[in-house]
Image (tube, rainbow over all chains, first blue to last red; front, side, top):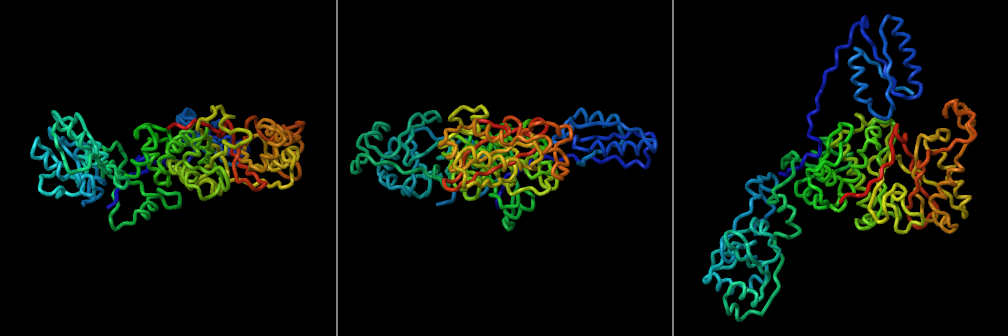
Amino acid sequence: MTTLLDPTSERALVARERLARPSTLDGLTVGLLDISKPRGDIFLDRIEERLVGIGASVKRYKKPTFAKPAPVDLRHQIATECQVVIEALAD
Amino acid sequence: MSDPTAGGPATSPDSAATSATPALPDGLVVVVKNDCETCQTVVPVLAQLVSSPGLTVYSQDDPGFPADMTVIDDTSLAVSWHHDIETVPTLLRVEDGAEVERTVGWSRDQWESFTGVEGLGPDLPAMRPGCGSLSVDPDLVDALRARFGGSALSSRRIDVASAEDEMEMMFRRGWTDGLPVVPPTEERVLAMLEGTSRQPSDIVATVPPDLVEVTVEKVAIAAVMAGCQPEYLPWVLTAVEAACTEEFNMHGLLATTMPVGPVVVCSGPGTRAIGMNSGGNALGQGNRANLTIGRALQLVVRNVGGGRPGEVDRAAHGSPAKISFCFAEADDTSPYGRLATEHGIDDGVDALTVFAGEAPHCMVDQLSRTPESLVRSFALKLQAINHPKLIMMFDAIVVMGPEHADVFARAGWGRDQIIAAISEHLNRPGSELVRGADGIDEGVPEAFASAESLPKFRPGGLMLTYAGGGAGLFSQIIGGWVNGAIGSKPTTLAVTY
């Protein structure tokens, strides 16, 4: 028998369940996160227009750079202010 | 002779039972082995001493040797290991359980004065050097260290069934980069850790994307798997430290859809001491140090940080350079120094730079014999990094071959002059680079359209290194990823041993 040393972090990753997808946006706040890729704002402007058109409340957010994870304070702010979030990845 | 490497303790360490030092009895003690002519020579002396004043005999390889006397079996080498026996015979004096004196090999004068007994071995030669102790046999020492060293290793032990193929098991667990890895046994990892003075439990860095603190031990495991020699470990540790800094942004390199990975550029006398290649095929195959140092870094990111293709690694194409991309600069023969010096490292200090780079492109110019012509060629080639109309966003490393460098050296051009001249030829008016120019939608935003002159690289973004074979009027260009505070900054560190 050979015994090997575990090369991994040996962490049990915490699997967090997503919130159930809401059946309606009535009374909910939708966060729109721009990751700072070129023209992401064009996509989000149109999404905002459509959402407002159906009576949703919208808040806009922006990452400082697409190349790094969103800062923890921004993630916390979105989580406390919104029930739904849309992230724009596109160029 | 029994096999000291066989059996349970080496593979399932019970450190309480094996790491305690076995006590020696008071009085005279000798450690011998049958497979040693000097030990056989001194048998009559040992017999003399056993009868008076008394002697305890330990045998490393044969409990029946010497014949006709009481011998303590040390075929496990526990006594020899713990009491640092390097030569047999070793004669020790023990008082109150502690060694107070020792002598090695056979010397009548020394043995007589040591034991206080006159007339020892009258028929023997006056002296004879001893033989190597089995406890320092290179074939056994790694297993003995694992068994008796009181393992400081804390990684989980995973038993592989004897009928299971350990290589396949490692593939199945997702521990490899797609190529086979060396099984990280405790013996191999302990041997790897001999390459650094750092403690196995020391924290080296916090590895993205899972943001896990990685210990020297886990890096050593990756180094074993990658195929490193122990003397490479300080370079791997330093590469991990550099790649996991906030400014280098390893997380971004993983997550990007671009085909970039950490390129490791090494320099200093240590590169030659460990046999790195800075000459012919420096960026290619065939050199163990170059290939395994870069690979070990990537295995740390994969196995400790959790950065795997298809998960956080979202590269659209990737690149063979993401398996391993590490080379040495020929800084000992470079006509214009090395990159690390440009980044503030003192001369003679081993150092490495991690750079967010893609696979190298070849720059061919076999006709230029003047620096003025050659810088224009470099500029044309460098303009195309990622896209000829995209500027300032990406850095680049030039790996200049000796024959190209010679063109500059003959003309007396130094590093700064070469970079400045290439940069000058990279300046373009905004009208050529703006979106839509040349019928190409890609380009810089409209706001730059009227700019008279725009540089390809930000200050410091064009970096010069020196490596390659002596024949061939070629250089290599390593294009970068998004640079600076919004992306990745090339990061240079002195190697920590």
